[in-house]
Image 1 (cartoon, rainbow, N blue to C red):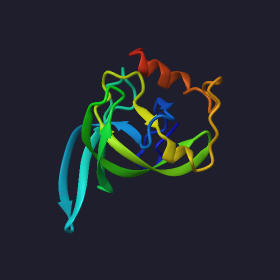
Image 2: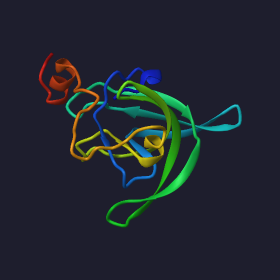
Image 3: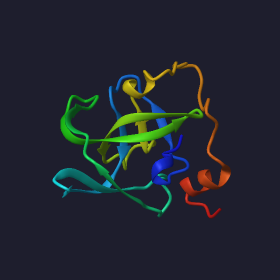
Length: 143
């Protein structure tokens, strides 16, 4: 999966049909105003083992209370991001959250999947795996 408009060619993502909105691991989240409109600046580390940070600035689309699987509610900023999933480009509502302890930097929720995707729970990596140099970065191995 990729986030082409923000320069992320590969990001490890997991399909989560239990989540309404997609979610992206974001660090250093800072809200600000641009031309009287709310914006957010944040950093994304696409791979767990990599040192590379990708900085982004996007308009704030919404703010939502999101309930975790444990029942804990948290207010999160929502941005619109174009993503490419199994070769198809779609726009998704994405919440920004700290997923540093999670194995996947991004979750793809139902709203994004409703744009023409079917989920086969018996299959994995239908869009292909990341190229070897990205997988090595994820393990902290030099390319």
